[in-house]
Amino acid sequence: MLVDSVRSLLLPATPFVAEQDEFDPNTVTPGVWGFVVTFLIMVVVLLLILDMVRRIRRTNYRAQVRAELEAEAAAEAAAVDEAAVGEADAQTTDAAEDGPRDDDAPNRG
Image 1 (cartoon, helix red, strand yellow):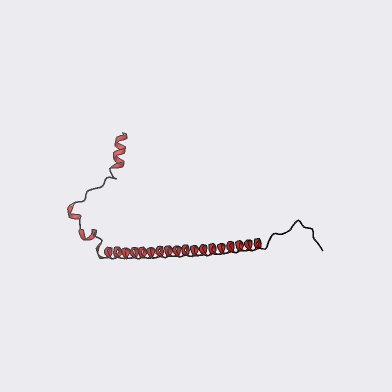
Image 2 (cartoon, rainbow, N blue to C red):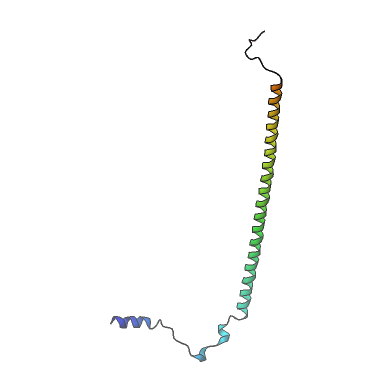
């Protein structure tokens, strides 16, 4: 009984094999319009890929320029720091050459 009900449900779902006389290859092929649509989709995808490559190159170039500018700024900052340290060393040397200071002497006035 269960087997008969399952068969009755599956029987309409089984595909029927068409006879050879019903097959017409002209109605099955995509034709000219199918080719045109496929070609246009291919052209659009190609243009999107080219645009993406152009944008990636631009982004990489901007990152490269930004890195170069940061490196130049860091080099300039290092040069300024070295100059400041050099001036501080020169001031310390000049102060040492003035002679000893007598900080313990009382103020005379």
